[in-house]
Amino acid sequence: MFTSYDPEWIKRCYSTLLGYSLYGDPALGMTVNKTDTTPPTLTLEQPNKYLYIKGSPIFSSRHVSVILGGIVVKASAVDNETGVATMELWIDGVLKNTTDANRLEWFWDETSILQKHILKLIAIDTVGNSFEKEHTVWMFNI
Image 1 (cartoon, rainbow, N blue to C red):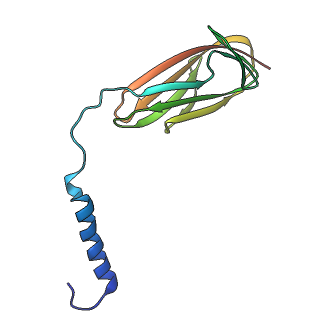
Image 2 (tube, helix red, strand yellow):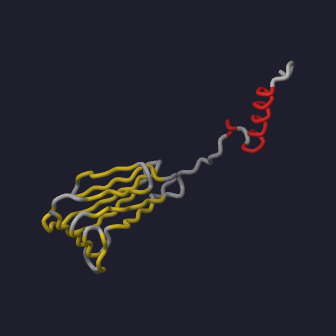
Image 3 (tube, rainbow, N blue to C red):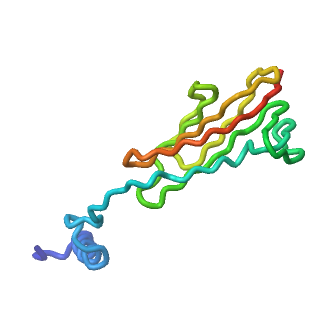
């Protein structure tokens, strides 16, 4: 193996030995056979129960979200066991956006003449557990 002086070969051998020393044998794996049955947690950051004018919250409301003009829908999901695989945004039963990150931001600027809309967010983790959250908004946007 070391019949001649080859610095590159020696470097590769030492880095392999160092890797085994620090991280162990990669064939052994690092996971425990544990079943994840916990769905991710989901947070709708915007819109909440406010009056929004062109995406800016003006004042708080107790019961309903009212949106005048467009708004950026913001949501985040967390799954501490296996991680978030995908997030979906549905409005009135129509899929509007999907992302493979744990953060979703989508600009909603569709024409709506003071109509009630149902926003549904779905977060799915990497093993298929899902969590849904619905939010009702009233929107006026021309």
